[in-house]
Every structure is written in structure tokens, then in C-alpha cells.
Amino acid sequence: MRVRARGIGVRLGGADVLCDVDIDAPAGQVTGLLGPNGSGKSTLLRSLYRAVPTHRGSVRIGDRDVSAMPARERARAIAVMLQDAPTDVDLTVLEVVLLGRIPHRSAFGDDTREDLRIAADALRRTGVQDLAGRLMATLSGGQRQRVMLARALAQQSPVLLLDEPSNHLDIRHQLELMQLVREQRSTVVAALHDLNLALTSCDHVVVLERGRVAGQGPAREVLTPELIGRVFEVDARLLGEQDPTFAFRPLSPLRSALP
Amino acid sequence: MTAPPLPAVVTAGRDRARRRARRLTLALALALVATVPLSAAIGTVEVSPLQSVQITLGHLLPGMPWMSDGSLTPLQDQAVWQFRLPRTLLAVLAGAGLALAGALMQVTVRNPLAEPYILGVSSGASVGAVLVIVLGSGAVLGLGLHAAAFLGAVAASLAVVALSRHRGALSPTRMILTGVALGTLFSAITSYITVSTSAQNVVGVLFFLLGSVSAASMGSLIGPAAALGVACLVAAALTRHLNALMTGDEQALALGIDVARLRGLLLLVTSLLTGTIVAVAGGIGFVGLVVPHVARILVGADHRRMLPVTVLGGGLFLALADLLARTLAEPTEIPLGILTAFVGAPFFLWLMRRSGAERAGMGR
Picture 1 (cartoon, helix red, strand yellow):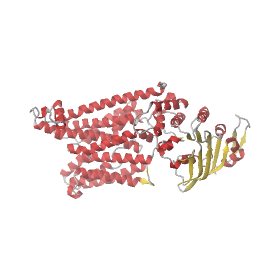
Picture 2: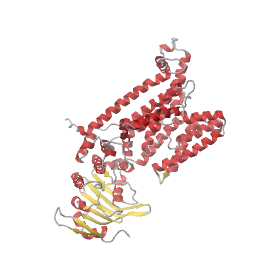
Picture 3: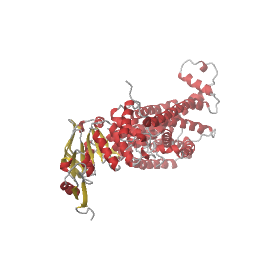
Picture 4: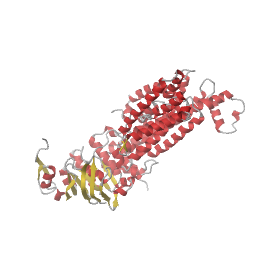
């Protein structure tokens, strides 16, 4: 299902964080949200599932307006993996992953066998099956992140939103995570910091600059040295034209951010 | 068609934890069922446990032969049915209710120090009760002690919610601090009224503040029983949501949970539950804070397992505490709040040092 946002405006604490943002995330593809710190990546992601109030604009999933969907239904359509996995939770990994079934189940009653199968499957795919009985609080940052992805997968939603999913992951797990996400065939919108990761694993990118869209389209067309240079204020170059050596290398900041 | 078996590595821990919780829940339920008639049998007037069961059944079911064949004296009947059974049942209801309210409050404000009185409920109730004790019910719109205490409790929680609302949202930190501030204010009012009254009233006030089930009658059980019933139903319907709330507001929101509404509902339920209990039993301490933690240590933090253990464990604990409170120093009675602390604190400290305690977040 395609995700379309039109004219999104978000104001937090009196400041405009997002201004008139339009994005199109094509169905079944991975869309990367890029931009420097404070450019509004997380806020945009959160406005898509209405965790921040938008004062303007609309978000549609397929042909449905997200603001008109009841919360439960929205959670069946959109799964979210947040930037910070909870560290102080006294639940086991399996219990956390089973939370992903909440939007699908009524209040009373136990986890069904299907819930358990879906959770087990999500744990296996994210490679944390062996941790199922461990407490969340005893895991490393990277392990926790994978558990939170497993929870999002257990929601079985057509849209998956990821807020810097590769934050605490080592290089191998970063690549594995993005590969796993691609295999989902869900519509994925991921806020990413790593431009190279975006190049290799996103079909489509949206570059934000101070709350506005600076560029949007197929990753290799949008991510040019010029755009990166302008938005991120670094000198960047392409190291090769062909896959998989296609990469940027930030060489130096154009001007120091520090006084 | 049979589904493929679930991988043991995933489900083994869960199965073990569930078996353990089921066994413990069953054991607590049986112990509770045994404790009530036993406690009703113990006291100055001698009654055997069998007789205590007979008297109870005789009042509930018509035409029981032992009620009219002279095997029970009127004194025995009175001791069990009018005094010991109501107070034992009130202890069970208050223990179960306070423990449940504590567990819900701890997840509502996501703070392990939370307890049923954190929003000033008990100090609000105290103001109501003390006004009646000291000035007489005529001064408080003709309300009785219980009604005045209940009104005080409800007024306190409403005030906390109203004062801690900020831009339509209830933030846990704001709620806790508002509760503490208002609680202090109410306590000051209570203290002022207490010190400016006669010595005889002071004893009555102290008994209320420390909590007691000695004044229980069958009629006084209705409020707490109804509130506990409603609270148990609401809690049973919300176990998954409570688990999600433990992982944080943002996470719960992403799972389609209306966090503000959930928090409001939990506050309403815990306030009513605590208010009805405090109104008849005073400010019994410790149960609401500690029993939920003990339950988490024993069966883990998943609310589907810990809530039944919390409710039954709280009821059993307070029933036993009441039994001790009225037998240890016979014929004087030790206030219940003193006993719960004396028995509960060392037990909790011991339990917290055991290895299983990390499961309940004691490793942090």
C-alpha cells in the first residue's frame, strides 16, 4: 500500500518543525528519509502514524486517510519501530514480541497458537530466537533493536515505519536488517543516518532540510554529491558508478559547525 | 491439518513460567479459602474451624440442621457471623484491592515506588474521617465516618487529576508530584485537627490512619467488594495494554493504544477501589506497595500472570496479618498498618535479595 503525505505541517513548542512536506512512498518499496540532525526526519515519521499532531496536511495509506482511522485499525495498518528500544522493561523477549499482536486481538483471552507462531517466526527472522526467554533489560542495544523489529514484524502490517533502525547495530546486522526489511514486501519508510546504507538499500529517498523536502525520488538520482554537499554541508564524492561500489565519502565539513 | 510445532527454544521459558504461575495462583486461592473460616474460628470465644464453617453456611443457606439443634451457642454464632467473619472478609477484600490498586498504579505512572495512596487518596480520606471523629458527623453534612472518608478520597484524586492535567495530557511525573504535594497539605490539615482535639479522639484518629478492619460489618463489605469486582474485570480486560504501557507511552501509542484514555481509566478504577477501601478500613499501608513487587519477583512482570497472584496474595497476606493483629497481644489489638509493616518489610527485604528478584527489575 502506498503512503502519501500532502502538505504536512508540524509545529512543536511554537517552532515550525515541518513545513508543507509532501512525500510519496511507493507500495512495497523501501523509502529512506534522510537529512541532518534536526531536519525533521523523526517528526515526519511520527506524523505519519499520528504520534505528533499535524496542524496541516493529510496522510493517506492506500486510499484511506490515516486521521480517519481508529487507533487499533491504524496499528493494524502501520507498524513502527522506534529509535529507542525500551531498556527498563521486565518483560521477556517473547512477551515483548507478542505485544505486536495487540491490534489484532480482543481484550480478553490468551495468546492464540497463531500469535505464538507469528511471534516465533518474527524472532527467527530477526535472529533473536535464542533470546526468547531472556528479559529485555538484559540484552545489548543491538539485540534490543532486533527484538523491537521482531515486534513490528509480528504486527503483520502492510506499512512499516523505522526510525533509525540501524542505530545500535554492527555493520553486518545493519545490512541484514535492511535486507530483511526489503524481503517483507511491505511499504517501508525508514529514517536513516547512513547515506551509504540508504544508497544500497532504499529504492526511493526523501531528503529533508530544515523541515522541508530538499529532494525526493529514486535513491541514485536524488543522492548526488551536490545535494549531499548542500544539505549536509560536507564535501562528498562518488567512489564508483557501478553496484556495489557506489558510495559516498564525506571528506570534510564545508564549514565547521562549531564556532 | 495440524500446524507445525512451535520451536521449543521460543516457548519453553514461557511454558515454564505459566505453569509456575498457575500452580502459585491455585495454591494462593486454596490457602485463602482455608484461611477465612480458620481466622473466623480463632479468638476469645472458642469456636472450632468446623463450627465456623457451619455458622457461615448456616447463615447463607436456609434449613441447615446445626443452626437449630443446640450444638452452637448464640455467643459463638455472634462471634463468628457478626465480628470475625466480616473483619476477615474485609481484610481479604482490602488486601486484594490495595494490592491490585498498587499494581495498576505502578504501571499507570511507570514507577516502582507508586502505591494506591500516591495520589493523596488516603490523606484525603483521613481529612474526611478525622472531621467526623473530632467534630461529629453533624459538622460534615451529617455524613457518617465511612461516607466522609470516601468523599475525601474521591475529592483528593479528582483534585490531583485536575491539577496535574497539562494541555489535556496526564504526565506521570506531574501526577506523582501533585499527589505528594496535595497529600502533604491534607496530612497537615489532619495533623492540625488531631493535635487540637481531646486525647480520646486522638486514639480513634490514629487507628484510622494506621488502618483497621475491626469495625467491619457485613454491610461495610459491599462497597469494597463491588469496587474490587469492577477493578478485576477492567484489569483482566487490559492485561495486554498494561504490558504495552510498561514499554513506554510511545510504544503503546504505536500499538494503537490510546494512552491518555487508558491512563484515565486506570486512575478512575484505582481511585474508586482505594477510596472504598480506605473509607472502611483506613490507611492500611505497605500492602499496595509491596505485594505487586513480590508477585513480579515470583512470576515475572507479565500482567496476565502477576495480577492474579497480586490479588490473591494481597488478600491472603492481609487476612493473616489481621489474624496476627488481634491474637498476638490479646486482648489488645495491634493496628493493622503496624503489623503489615512488621511482618511484610523483613519478608520483602529477604525476597529482594534472592536471585529471582532481577526478574522484577531489582537488578537496576
